[in-house]
Image (cartoon, rainbow, N blue to C red; front, top):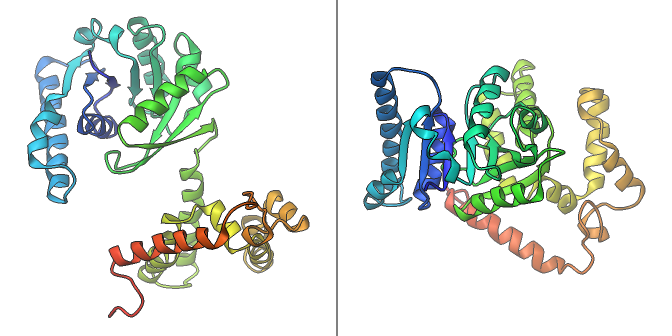
Length: 324
């Protein structure tokens, strides 16, 4: 019996299969498209080669070893729909990874729910379709959850788990536990267009592109600023944590200035920032902000965060005093 079934052999499906197999789990990958035997065998060979090549590459970087390749590949089996039908009933977790069209997903979920156990979790990797809409395409809507993996799936620790209005606690728990069991760090959220990362990422990317349009700096210098001034800090501090760390009032005044001098709509502070400003909840130094800092040993907290930041700088050879 496989630990997970992956419906669709596209890039994301292959990445998820690799992550599970690398962590010691057995995976059944199902080619859900109708094709002749020669075409199917060709697809299987391509998928296996891509996964194997990736594992070899990672072993060369010190992740895993060459000796782990054969056992990991042995944990991955592949088949077509007809052969899969007799196997799906014993698998507790499904990942759907077909194209982002209603027709493709509707047809697939109708078929999968017909052959899966009634309590099997159906996790769609859709980055656009709402959980509730997907749940309506199958049976037992309480078992439907969205699992948004980030590329490259094997390496990225985060998986965004979006629950629908009918998603059961049991289904969410099983998915979260399965992800944690293979070393991923899931976050659970309510269903929202764009999830967490794509919403923040789209704003940042568009603003970077606008800076290019406006001739504020060269493409190379904008990217250098992002790598060395923006992104590097958020590997140690979460973005909301960073507001409390630096001070909500700093964000409030920066937003006020930028909204008046760049764009009123893009830079207007959200109501939560305005409210925190009015209430004197400016973060760590006030004992309250988005987080509750009462009872926190601030000196110890700062030492740990700055220590982690210095470790990151050392790993990237970016410590103060280095030769440029």
